[in-house]
Structures are given as C-alpha cells and as structure tokens.
Image 1 (cartoon, rainbow, N blue to C red):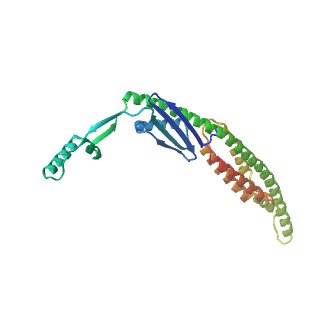
Image 2: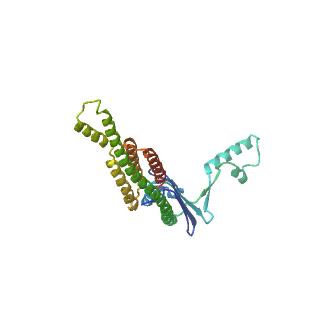
Image 3: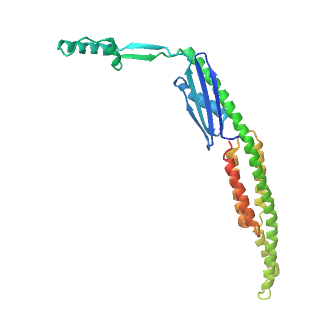
Length: 295
C-alpha cells in the first residue's frame, strides 16, 4: 500500500482542569524513529506512547508533542525555612549586641533572603492526574488517526505519479526487446558477411563457423534479463496493491531493475540501444527518488 511518510496533525482536548494539546509530525526516514516531547506528569508513559505510534506508523521520523496547560491558577504551599531563619536571627542579634546594627530582623527582610521563604506548587491529586492522562492518551490516538489519514491521502498522489513512471519503464522495456531482436539479427548478418569475405583466404569448416556464429550471437541474447524486468514490473504492482507498507521493498526492487538495465546496456547491439538504456535509467532514478517518500 502506498502511504506517504510525510504528514502533520494536531488535536486539542479539554479537561475540566486543563487543556491538552497533541501534535504529530512525520518526515522521511529509513526506519521508524519516534521523538517524544512530554509533560513531566506523563514521563512514565513514554514506552506506552511509543507503542501507540508504532501501531499507526511503520517507517519515518515521527515527532509527537503533548502539552498540558492548567485552566485554573495552581494551588501553592508557602514554607518557612525555619533553620535558615533561626540562623539569620541569631546572626542579627549578635550584630546588635556589638552595636553593628539595630532594629532586628523584619518579615520583609526574610523575603529578600533566597530560600528563606519557599513557594511550592502543590502536586495535583493522583485521581485528577489519571483523568488528565486519559484525556491525553485519547487525544494521541485521535492525532495519530488524523496523521494516518493525511499520509494516506498523500499516498494516493504518490501512487499516481509512481504508476506513470512505472508504465514509462514498461514501455522502454518493450522497445529494448525490439531493439535487441533487431540488433541480434544485424550482428548475425555482419558475422556471416565477414566470414564470407575471409572464406577464400582461410581453409575453414563452414559448419564449425556457423556454430561459432550462433554461439557468439547467443551471448547477446537478453531474453532472461527482459523476462526478469517484466517480472519486477509485475511485482511492483503486487506490492503497491497489498495492504502492507511497501517502501523498503520498492527500494530493493528498483535496485534489481537497475541491475537488469545495466546488463541490457552491456549486451544489446543496435544504434538506438544507448538512447533507450539512458532513458530507462533516468526513469528508474525518478522512481527511486519518489519511492523514497513511501512508507
């Protein structure tokens, strides 16, 4: 099945105490690479969230970000650092006795001393945290579903483009088949003509010469390469029609097709062969570049 590796989705869900936002962005990558940005309250769910991503995405770099923004002012605890305050008081009292200062230690003075008065945000109740986490998990599923839909839609455009390029390669294969047959016949004719020119100069057995001509011409036979190329093109359609991700398989198939075209270029005779080989390689390169976007 053709799916693009690129996509974006964003979902926002409301909880009575917070707003949960989830964004997912995917780009090309050889394997599945998941990057997570999570609030501290969801750090323990990293493994589970990676599993959720893996259910929807087989290949690509996926960046999943979750934000939890409280809709109410946070509750806080104000804590007096008594040991520090006692030490400060004793120091100030000693300074007063020596006549170095006067007036004692005021409450305003305490606020100017770092860590004398500590303001801490009160931890959210576990039950409330659990309900917020559930809202976030549901939002992640919705986001990944939307990401998959976008990647599927993009895949339809990829499929149309890939099919047109595949058809172009198939047409060039048939032209190469015709050129190979014509080139082989021309080669045999040239060999027979050359042997006829040398017949008067050399004493040779004509039946042996004929066998060598046939054997030499057989070396330029490319029926096996053409058959494999046609098989690869058929397999291409099988892969793209199957429900499973096929990007990496298409990469491998293109390598095999390119190898067969190189062999054809080395074996086929004829004036138009070079142009056809160059055109086939160009189309295969276009296929390779586009297939790199397929999951």
